[in-house]
Length: 137
Figure 1 (cartoon, rainbow, N blue to C red):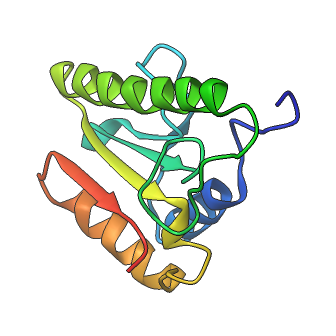
Figure 2 (cartoon, rainbow, N blue to C red):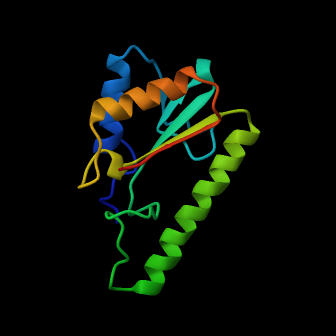
């Protein structure tokens, strides 16, 4: 697992390139915020996470429980999912708006066009909605 990247994943890089090209400026991985969000938009009081469907237990075709060491994986992935919820609550309590873009929105058989995902992200950032979640269709 040491080889698994936590930052600068391909879905995250696609979001960063696209949002930057649309003129949106952000900070990266601020460790002083709960969960060290992938993208931080301080002026808009918003953060975004690019979640991998496997690691964050998303209910989609990209998530499948491993057949080896089932107890270990259920514990590990279950803890990730509960930590995600706690981080979301803590960020909201601090006045941050939280957005999540799931990996399946950008790859796999249910992927959406990158332009659609970026437009939805930009619309959410311009709004005052507290929560956004984008997944595959």
